[in-house]
Image (cartoon, rainbow, N blue to C red):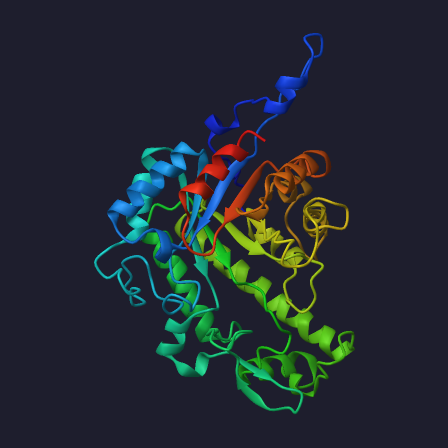
Length: 391
């Protein structure tokens, strides 16, 4: 792992007293000051940065509401409002998304944000990529049904486009985009997203099956996917996790060659989820920070799950503490990995205060939070960010 401290604006770390504490404490009681959590936000570019005016208005709202880091997508991350994979910056490798051929959103956001001391991380979605499939249709991810029939995988909604992450040419293509961004733009960090699967039936492309069979002695099409604890299925998911980790390491090395001190992060899912083929312990030595997606409501949990002993942050910390074979990092370097839980901005006040207080007690090394929004950031959402800086 790169020896890099992923620090945030010191101005946002000023000590603050929580309002209810100040109003209820007696004159004789000493109220312990509370350091507010530093706030990051994740932004879908196509819904927020469509021209210079929208960038200017957005950055002013970010400044007004104490945002320290903007994680912005540099290529489309969904197939809802356009096609995934197309660029929001001036690229020589991939076509620009509709509406961005004459507008370099990444350059504009960096220029505006840096004027106010706000950092900009380039979020690079990895394997949801219609643009890559348009480039080479053989790269499309494939799945298998219970009858052993193969088909293109189009997500849970039937209209999402994924590429095979284990195809060498796909990896070369995706890595080239990261290198282009790092080389040409003054970003403060890179964040990989989409490094997990929503079904363990993928990827069934011929190249993946051949590589897996060569390493493990059987074709993954012989796996009974209805038996969640089968040895074959566990071998399959473990192998995929190892391949994803090797990919992250390659990205880390690419970035280090261009800008050695540039931070690399990954959006991660809960280590307790099965079938995702994501194992944080396998790639932790290649990253500087991670953003666990703490969407407890979607998973049917209460807010306590974020920080409790059986929750996502504790499970993530356990993975970060795991010793991996041939690891070359020291304990000190491992603990330097920054954990930034990613929350839904539309949480109610009680849940947010519960999470913040719980993290201060149970996961005190967590000092920042990220808020993500699907679609447009509204003035009300920004106001929520500003208010939560006092919690």
